[in-house]
Image 1 (cartoon, helix red, strand yellow):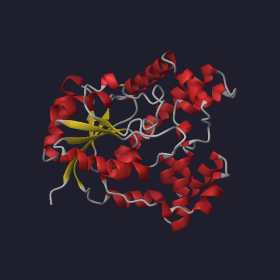
Image 2 (tube, one colour):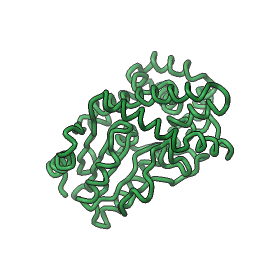
Image 3 (cartoon, rainbow, N blue to C red):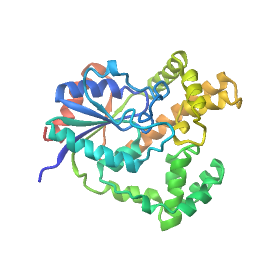
Image 4 (cartoon, rainbow, N blue to C red):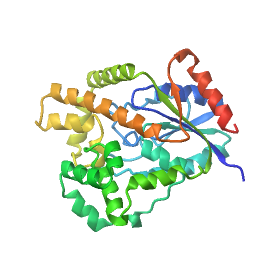
Length: 307
């Protein structure tokens, strides 16, 4: 039985994945599946740099605006729903294009990772959730330094999951990820990672944050806060939301919140790229020269996928 094709277009925040994904979808007859752990939330548009309906150019987009900010979206839900979408897209005779920056989600889908809620040790999780973020990260550094390097201290959810795994099994979750990398993908895979010179990327990140501020990020976060969203929710731990929420709760000045947001977004982009450099199947596609970017991407796709 032949494998379903799957094009992955990954890359750090603000690198230009959306524009390239639209061009590829137009040429290939594609439908786009978002691999962004924040764009799933409704009414969280500015801080997630979510594509607007008028920008979609009539190309179907999936896994955007699929749950409320009060709900928890996780890798298990993503893999389940994205897998079904790939089947449906292929049955329609179209090409699935997975686009986003959440490397863990992309890896889990690309290599057929399986998850179940029963695997969670709820007692251990409750115990870990009582600890401050700094202490959790120190513990992770001691038990799984590879994961600690890749996971930011403020990403409590992933830090706790990594600690759960090593404490339950005695094996670092980074070792599990290495084993998964050796698995053959269930898809006919073309795995592209868009990159650009670091200075340009950081300039684009700073400009994106400035644009978010000028188009109403503070008002967006204030509205979510008035709905009852708070800092302990998964949705409010995303970049842009936790920093502005801290400002609204009087923990810092707005200027400081913006400075922190730019800094942490740059650090996040660096960690994203570290992740993808460890993906054996990933092809790094430099954005420059931009004039030939689409054709270079299509060339890689034709080499690797039976489309």
